[in-house]
Amino acid sequence: MENDSDEIDLIEIAKTIWNGRLLIVAISSVFILIGIVQALLSPIVFSSSTTFIPSNQESVQSSGLSGVASLVGINLGGMSSGAEISASMYPLVGESIEFKRLLLNQYIDDKKNIKMDEFLINYYGIDKSSYKQNTNKSFVSEAEQQLFEKLNNIITISVNQKDGFVTISAKMPESEYASNSCVNAREILQEIIINNKIKSAKQQLLYSEEQLASKRIEFEETQNKLAYFNDSNLNIVNSSVINEREKLEADFQIINAVMVELSKQVEQSKLQVSKDTPVFSVLKEATMPTKRSSPKRTQMVLIFAFMGFIVSVLYLVIKAPVTQIINEIRSWKEKSRSLFFF
View 1 (cartoon, rainbow, N blue to C red):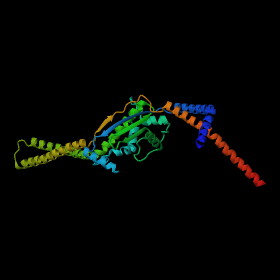
View 2: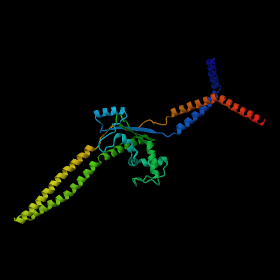
View 3: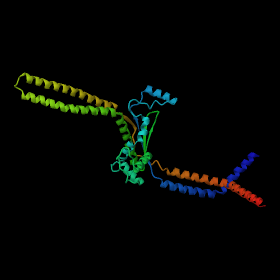
View 4: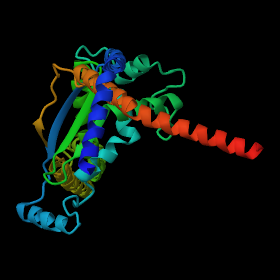
């Protein structure tokens, strides 16, 4: 009997839905219309991405150890020696003010006419009266903060912890802008990583070059003094002249030896800078997408149509029970009121 009752209920529900089919069509049509309007008004977005991998990957043995360690919740893959920024920290670099300011100053069109900050200001109607780029490293104006927030929605940096590759994606209303922004973001990120890695070696190179330049001046002065002295005393042979010549030659040899040593240090510093410079292998270059990534208008209309169908069916199914419950509550209130006055 219970199964029969359930079957009768299903039949009643089916009848209710069939009798209200016109209402279902009407409500679904309204939702479809809303979906069409929403699809047409939604901004067009093109997506482009690039993938690269740092050259400083762990050895096979270390990678195997990292894989085993990851099973017990220990991450060894992100550990690196020296002052190098690990790949797992790249998204944090992308959130830095330095990265965003450099990206805002890049051209996003092939003709090099439009910069990122100009496009965002015009596209989103940002008040640029308070926007002055790079006026202070620690101060961020209100307009600049708005530009930073827009960049967060445009550029995405993700890291595959297992394989170690980094993916940068960009979303822009123009295909050309998306690909160029993606490439700009990758180049700026790599530049920041490289500068951080070779900072110490570059400082040593700069110091060695300054010392070499200073000693070169002294070397040339001593060389000129020795040449002038020899030219002035060609036919003079006495002890004072010989002593003075030997003194100048000794100074010249000392400075020359220092010059040779400093030159070696400069060359070694250059080699160290070259050695410390990270190399990035691009696995997938950013390309200009031919199809927009959003909005997916057909899908949006179908979703709204489905929502309209569900809403209308639910309305028809629960209308009678809800109406009955409301009527019972009203009836109970009226009876309670009549008993109270009685």
